Structures are given as structure tokens and as C-alpha cells.
Figure 1 (cartoon, rainbow, N blue to C red):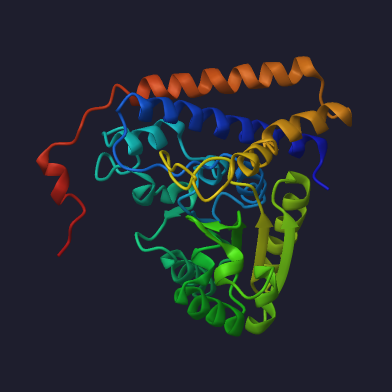
Figure 2 (figure 1 turned 180 degrees about the vertical axis):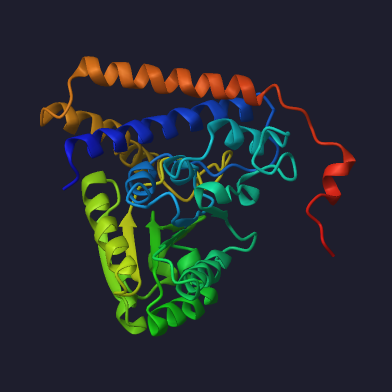
Length: 319
């Protein structure tokens, strides 16, 4: 079990990530963000508690569902806002709007592939790099249940298992690949069952329970760092919003949507912290006010950014 201090840090980052996303959605509604955004509401416990066990020099390949894992890895809120605003405050300084372009090597955030499931092989490659360089770095790759069925997962998992690479594959299983339910396209009930076929450890946890996620991820990271090989960790979660902002969610009934939205990991963690005496209401109220203020300061700074000039197009181009 995480210590009380660790539990409070998990909650702080979860609330910060939720507040950041809420502010970004306001920017989207105001017409300041172009393109799609795939909200991570409901995934915060898995993304935050699944990232905090990493060291600063460990590597993260994120998925398209929210930004909580990047915030947990230490990325600047200003840069995250700037990337969606496509201005020079972003991590790419305006090269591209949206989540697929975000990268912050200083914090170990390697980005993601523009092709769904491409992160699987990139994670295996980063883990192989750590092996060749004789470091004890660990790589974590987050992806959804839809991307778990891509052919690249088989290729990457087979190599990772055969070579005992220091990588943890985290399936964020919300049961829906856009509008396709898992049972229509996946024979097994749990993706963790697939791990045995690759010679790796398979673990399934309640992805809405940050304590369970933190314990499972800590063990997986320690295993990878110690030479024990990769882990396929599946966290079951509830996607509280559509696949993308504007998704009418016609594949779910109003009753099903209401049940899903009643399971909020941020609210549930707050209640548990109060119930077990880890924190009091005054302390959590203060923490929440501070996170809201931090987000607003970051938003204000990001909104002062400017769109890049033509010269930015050729920076970093070598061929």
C-alpha cells in the first residue's frame, strides 16, 4: 500500500489533471483549440498512480486519452496547454496542435506514434536502448483496449518477452474501442491473460482504485528494473465522456451513461482519504484551491503565446 504521503500526492496530481482538462475543455468550447480532444475523465487513477512509481529518468509513451500521465511525469502545464493551442508556449513550440505531437525528453516523455498502436514497438525499442546502454531505466507504454488488438502489440510483446526487456505495457481497458465493445473483437475477457503467451507477467487491477494501481505498478517497475522482464498490466476503467469531444455516444443508453458517470475516481479517492483519516476536509480543500490556481496561472501564460512563423517549419529537419 502507498504511504499516506504518497496517497496524498496521487490525489493532488489526479485533481490537478482533472482541473487542467476542465480548463482545456473551456478553451475547446471557446474555439481556441483545433482538432479533436479525447478526454481522460475516469482514467485519472490509472494514469497517475500508474506513472508516479517511475523515476524522473524512466520513459513514458502515452496514449491519446487525456494528459494525466504526462502531468504525473512532471510536464509543464503551460507547455501542455501550448501544444493544444499550437503556439510557441508548447513543448513543440507550435509544430502541431494536439496530443500526438507532445514530447518532453527532459522528463522522459517520448511522445506517441501518430499511428494507433505504434507506441508498442517504440516502447520495446526504448527498453532495448536502455539495455544496450546498461542503464536500469524502465519504459511504460499506456494504450487502450482498441490498440491492444493491433498487430504491432504482438510484435513488440513477443520481442519484449523473449529478451526480457524492462518495459511495462499498461492497457487502459474502458471496454470500448471508439464505439465497438470489447466482446465483439476480443476472445478473452482479460487482456492480462495474453501475457503468458509472451513469457511475461500478466496483472489485472481495478483501474479506478489508485491504491491497487500503485501497488501493481510499483511491483511491475521493480521487476523490470531488476531484470525480471516485462509486465502486461490491465486496468479496468470507466470512460466518462465520449471517445472524443462531440461524440454523441449513441452506442450507450442514457441509463448506462449515468451509471458510468457515477463512478468518479477523483471523488472516490477524496472520500476514502477522508474516511480513513489520511486527510481532513480543510487540508483537501486547500490542496484543491491550489491546484485550480496553478491551472489558471498556466492557462493565462499559455494564452499569451504566439503562432510560429514559417521558419519553425524547417527547424529540426535534417533531410
